[in-house]
Structure formats: structure tokens, C-alpha cells
Picture (cartoon, rainbow, N blue to C red):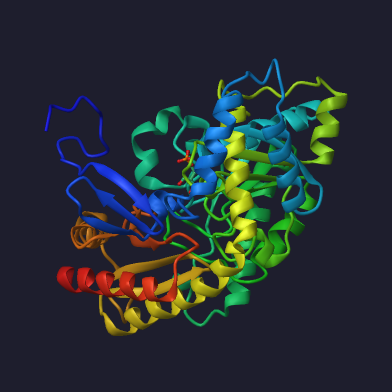
Length: 440
Ligand code: PLP
């Protein structure tokens, strides 16, 4: 192998070279096969090597790949915008296209702040978010992210936004019912708004199901309904960060659909293009666009690759594939089976505190003591060891590490392509079980 000049996630580590992928499988150049048990970064949701997408990619490239959004619109981008308006609930009809989840949440942050400026209320410029959350790695997105490990080095550069507790049912106070607990967590938002002053708060942002910082933590029913009420009462915009949960990952089109809650802004990424191209989106309501149109008429955001025809055509082909193959319904159905299998593992293996999830977004949390739920310190690296062992055995699993150091730092995400079959799930579980047994 020739010397590498590429900065890799872990410097000094040697990575296998990818050769190709088909369905839920990836193959490296040595011929080793891996089950993509997490779609890379909960991204490859329609599986690898889908011909229809490759064809759409080629067809668009033959016409035109790039035309700048300040100069042109395109059939591809308009069709994708129309498809998202059709899928999104309520009056979430307007899409701002970007290329990554971080750009999508940061654009949502900017649009929320700009909205209040255009309404003549410029002091409403703070965002409330939650601990144990992840909204992206760029500074604006990271400033809203309650992910201890990822924030740590950059704290002096991050906006000091008010942060509240997430609902974390596994670690709720003993004896408290799920619904009481959900309301208690939601009411923290009201307390934070009152503390900061509603005239200072632009928006509240949350992931429907906590992903990278918690490991598929599902809120109690009633939580988001109460969040919506509070946002309405204090005129605070609600941003649903659906970068991980959107486009069928949780068994419904969007994560928020589980609770019938319509946000004011919604972000998408990952499954929106299923890894076939960098593509993400910030979707906003008629009211937001009407306000800005009547005001300055210009949204102060955007990137060079925003709304490029090439990525739009690919993303559209992915959404059409999801529809054609009923992958949202499959996600619900097969996801229930996956969770059942993970729950059985949790019963069997002492290292697993909880198996949880919604649709095809599932997780396992590792604990030192199952009875007391005592967490491992981050330094124990149990999730990392399970991930490394799984990889060795041909299974790729995603980390949810360091969200709340020492409280909930040790979880994994199991989120295979929505196309996975029951027998493939059995194969995945068998390898995962062996990997955990090798670590415990
Ligand atoms: N928001 C959520 C909920 C995410 O899970 C992620 C990535 O994991 C992001 C935002 C950031 O997306 P990206 O890595 O594409 O910038």
C-alpha cells in the first residue's frame, strides 16, 4: 500500500479500503464482507448499489451537474422541493437545500433568528436546546448541541445557549410514570423560557429520537405535544432536527409523525439522499417564508453547493425508491423485529442495560451494573470495544458515545438499511451477540 496523505478519523490507524457495496453488504478490497448495520452513519437507508439511483445520477450528469442557485433553478430541484412539500406535514412547504446535516440545522438556526428580526423583534435571538443532543459539528450547529465530548475543545467559541434535560426514560426517577416524566422534562422548556425571557428566545431545537449522543433514546408519548404547546404559548419556533430520523428511519415519514406534532422548521439529511450524494434540507412553513418575503426578501444563508441539480436529481431518485418499495412501512415492520431481537439480547447479556428504539433506529446501552444501572465511565470504552469487535467479525455498528460523560456515555446505534430482511437481521444479531460476548 502506498503512503496515505488523507486525514482519517483516527490518525495512525490503518483502515481497510472499500471495494463495493450491494444491499446491506459492503466489501473491502481484501474481499471481506461486512453487514452495514448502521448505514455508515445512519445514512445508507436504501442499501448499497441501487441501479435506479445510479441511472438518475448519470442522466442528470449528462444534462448538467452544476448551475449556481443565484443564476438558475432546475427541474430536478423543483421536483425535489415539490416532493418534500407533499411529504412534509402542515404548511412546511418551503425547502432550503444544503449539503450536510450541520448546514441544515445551522440554516434553521439562522432562519429562525432572521424570522424574528423581520417581524421587528430582534431580541428574540437565542436558541434553547437539550443536553444529550447532536445537531452538527460546525460552530453554530455545535453551539446548539448538548454533546459533551464533541463540544469540549471548542467551548470558548460556542454560543452559550440555554440547555435543558432530555427525556431519558431508562434513567427516569424511580417510581415516576413515563407520562409524568415526559411532562416534567417538557416543562423544563417553559422554565428555561421564563428564566431567559420569552422576548429573547427565537427557537427550541430537538431530535425526535436522540441519536448520536444517546443511542436511539425515544421520548415518552406526550412529551412533544407539551413542547409544542409551550412553544406556541411563548411564541418560540420549534425546530425538529430530523437529520437522522427523517425519511422513514423511525417507521414513519418523519420522527415527529409518531406524536402528530408539526414543527415550524424541520431539518433533513442522511436518509434524504441515502449516501448517494451529499444532500440535506431545512424545510420551513408558509408563515416564515411569507414574513421574510414581505421583509428583506433574502434569506441570509446558503453554500456553493446548495440546490445543485446533480444532488437534487439523486435525492429525488432516492425518495422515489423509498416510495416505490414502501420502505417506510418496511422500516416499521422490520424495525419492530430488530428491536425484539435486541431486547432478547438485553435479557441474556449482563452488559446491556437497555435495548430501545423506534422503527429501524435502535440502540443498546451498556452498563456496569444492570440492577443499579450504574454507567461505565467514558474511559472504559465498552461501546468502542463492541464496535471494534463487531467490525472485526464483519458487522458495522455506530457509536453513541460521550453524549453525557459518565451518565450515558456508552451506547451503540443499530440502524441498518430499511431494506434489510428478517434473516439478514438474524445474521446481524448473531454477530453482534458474539462481539458483546467477546467484550464482557
Ligand atoms: N443532526 C442530527 C440529528 C444528526 O444526527 C447529525 C449527524 O449525525 C447532524 C445533525 C449533522 O449532520 P452531518 O454530519 O451531515 O453534518
